[in-house]
Amino acid sequence: MADIAVQGAPGGVRFSPLASLSTLVDPGRTLIVTDRRIHALFGSAFPPCPIAFVPEGEAAKSWEVLGGLYRRLTDIRMDRDGLILAIGGGSISDLAGFAAHTWMRGIAFAAAPTTLLAMTDASLGGKNAIDFEGYKNVVGSFHQPEAVICDIETLRALDGAQFSSGMAEVVKHAVIDGEEYFSFLEATLSAAGGSGFNHESCSSAALRRMVADSQRVKLAIVARDPTEKGERRILNLGHTFGHAVEIVTGAPHGHAVSIGLRLACAYSVARGDMAEAAKARIESLLKGYGLPVRLSETASGAVADGGIRKAMARRIAEALVMDKKRSGGIVHFVIPRAIGEVSVERVAVGALAAFLEEVEL
Image 1 (cartoon, rainbow, N blue to C red):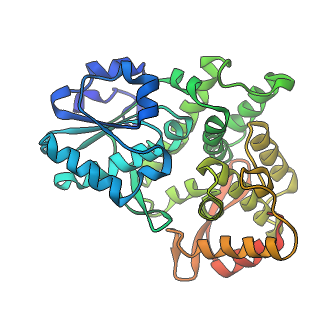
Image 2 (cartoon, rainbow, N blue to C red; image 1 turned 45 degrees about the vertical axis):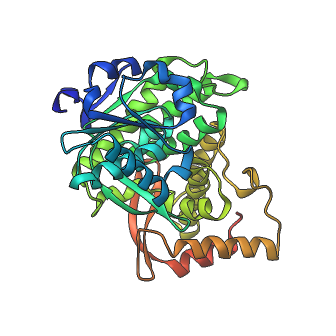
């Protein structure tokens, strides 16, 4: 499958219509992993390969679904020269990449992401995983895709909540990258006027730049630290709190990360590391692209004062204990200091838990 990679593109990433997949894969050696909603939307552009259907969303990332995928690979007699092609969102690429890495000690894997979250984050960098007993991504591996094929026009089919979920990662990348990318997102939002940004009608150029710049940020960091021993940890900005919020509330990943990013900024301000003005700009950009920044703005509803709020804070703090970045009672926590300036520090879980007891959730 070496011919599927695009010369000059980082990580074998290319922008191309889904229909181009038919010219890039060998149908006799490829298994497509997707869900039925994605197939209903885009199946006419799929190459003529056998298909394994999995549940939508996070439900795909389970032992049971992984076992079913292994049975499908057995049924089609997939050998070590085969390829698993994930078409869909981040959960599909997480599952398919892990299956590819573990089938016969590793076969080729490629992805055609159809969501903003998958194009800008989940399908890039080689992280693959399934969930276990309610904890996200605790069983996984690193297995780089041979190619990532992005059809920008598939983003038009997303509903508003799905698109905004991906924008959490886009904003995160802009905070890490610096003023030029962050200001572009502010200007794009401002140009949309009072009606707000509309991914269905905005220009393809704007969508492509969002995706391409986020890919640039992530892939450059991954290239320097492929297995997350150091610098790559900064890509977890907003995710320590965000994953805990996701576990406790069931909010979509990007929405939970948005809340986590706001909480990380608030924690940094409380420590005196970030200016309130920078926090306000980040919060404003998240809200402008339709993202919640507080639990009361999610589908789980308002968080009451007093005992209920404190109980919610305790549940989120308890979820931090299973964070993959934890070592003993310490978490490798990403501190945002300014737009374009972040760092990773070893922070006590207890300190984060105490902060959650006091902050507005």
